[in-house]
Length: 108
Length: 114
Image (cartoon, each protein chain N blue to C red):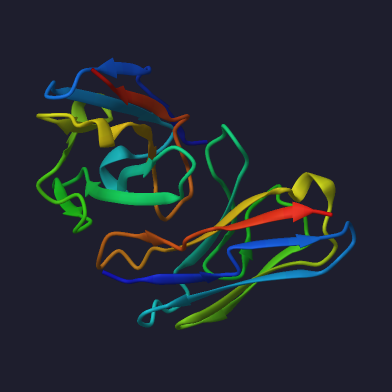
């Protein structure tokens, strides 16, 4: 199965900062990478699909990039509501999808 | 708009069997992969397996192969996750989800305790 390595595991930044989370796949997954946000007690929410497409209704401060094995999620201006855990997920569907380990984002 | 509605919370004893469900609506159930995700207390998300209801093709993560069974009933647009003998370590929240489209159920808390 495809392993997803996500970093950092935690990050703390003030409101307004630009933050970046990275995700690396153990083999090429083309563009089949999604980013999710999960808040405590809630189901994950899709932010980005196909590596760089913004899900409807998601604020434009979230963006994704990458192709093949290396991907990033960027939040251009961190907001208090962004306090959450973020996960990358590959879904090439030749194998079972897999998640990265998660990045907990805290607001300073 | 897709909706995934899961069955309610369960409390079971070790060794007992369990089958939880996820009923979907708002899209053609037969035509899209759907599966189950485990989240143990305070931990990350793990895909357990996925099923294509149209032909029941099923794939399991190596960690869950032989431990659970995923099935689907096309006649009622419902996907299932089944255990034959629960362990305390199966205590977790289980989500049904569509891996490509990003739709999720609300989660089912399964507690296994003697």
